[in-house]
Structure formats: structure tokens, C-alpha cells
Figure 1 (spheres, rainbow, N blue to C red):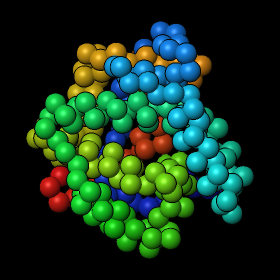
Figure 2 (cartoon, helix red, strand yellow):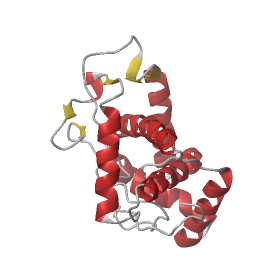
Figure 3 (spheres, rainbow, N blue to C red):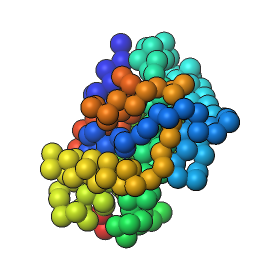
Length: 213
């Protein structure tokens, strides 16, 4: 049995309730899973990300449990892809940057916490549905969110940090065109998520600060 909340303790910002305000106004463009401003997230790109996770899950000794526990993987993945673009806008507005060095430091710290490089990939796959090829992107997202929270004068990982980030994301999302294909869920304004899904990294991740964060 997979215990999805007992994997590696991440060196990252707590991203509780960080999904942006998304409007499901019908299919924005043919072949699009979502559109963020003028950038299209294509159905093929979304499926490629989903397939990478499924392939890794199928290779795991716990494949059946992992697949069963991620039945909403497509919607979760799309939510994460939208969040990434929204965070990029917020970071740009706040003058926040993430360097390769930042990512390397975090990955090394996470590998140490997980018990070594070979242990990190299965831990992230189990807890956050992160494919091995997306580990650096995962690190970047966490660092970016942490730096944005810090730029607001709040401690990353705190309840106040989570709330401040969520408020900023929601405020920024309202100024952007963000349309999601209803095929992947209906926007739940009250819970700030697509339908009943929740992005895998919306769990509290205890923070080990990254230099410059």
C-alpha cells in the first residue's frame, strides 16, 4: 500500500492552495487543453507529461497502487502546467529569478533527504506524481514560489506565507486570460481548483532554505 504523504521531506516552499483562478469558458482553441494569455497548453503536451508519469509508475514495484491513487492525473497535471505559467508571471512582476545553481542546490538537498539520488525519483513519483524527467522543473517551481513568498516579507512554509502567495496568484490570475478546456474539469471557485482534483504538490512541504531564496 502506498502512503502518499510519508515520502521525502522537501526543501521547498509550502504550496497550500496555490492554484490560480481559472475560468472554464469552453475550448479556447482547437487542440488546446488550456490557454494562458497567448500561450497554448496543447493536448499533446499535456498527454506527453501524463504519459511520462504513467511510464514511471508502470516500472515501479508499486505500480498498481500508484496508478490507482492518481486516477485524476490528467487534470492534476494540467493544473500544475497552468500554475507554472502563472508563477512565471508573478515572479517576473516581483523581480524574482531562479538560477541553475538554485535548482542544483535544492536537488542535492532533496537527494540527501531522500537517502540518495536513486531514492529521490521514486519518492517524488509516489508523493507528487513527478516523473524523473521533471525533477528539475519541480525544484524550480518550489524555489520560485518560496522566493515570491520571501519577496512579500513572509516566511516560506508558514500559514501566512501560503495565504499571501495564494492571494497574489489569485489577484494576478484575474488580470490574465486563463481558459481551461472543460473536458479536464470545471473550475471550483470556492475551493480554488479544477473540480475535485488537487495538484499533487498542494501538500505542506517543510522548507530547507535555498541560498538566495
